[in-house]
Length: 123
Image (cartoon, rainbow, N blue to C red; front, side):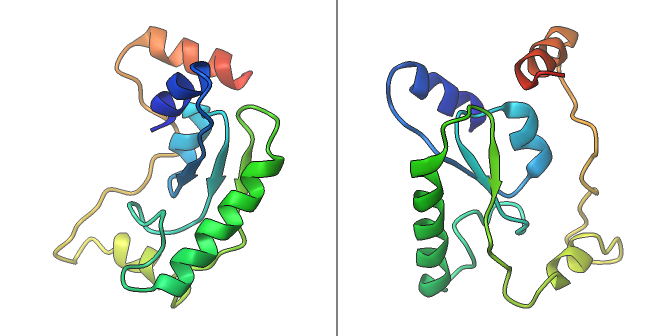
């Protein structure tokens, strides 16, 4: 998503990445992005909860208007319904839906990819 956003922005099309994986959006360096600590794949909010989805869309669009610094990530003031219980379930190794914990360090297919991402992020 980050690469697509950068591609579109280079062609004059404004974008906003709504992210739920901070490590990915941090190293993907999209022009404008917002982050919510939600389960992966739920950037639009919880299923069948149109009020929460609308709240997220409104807050993201309000932030989008003021984002001028490329690569800046704004944390939205949104909370997942039920709190952080989803994190326990996502990390439960005994559950049927076994997931690997999120890496604190990004992985790259090629060494050149790592160098480019770090250069873009200013590291």
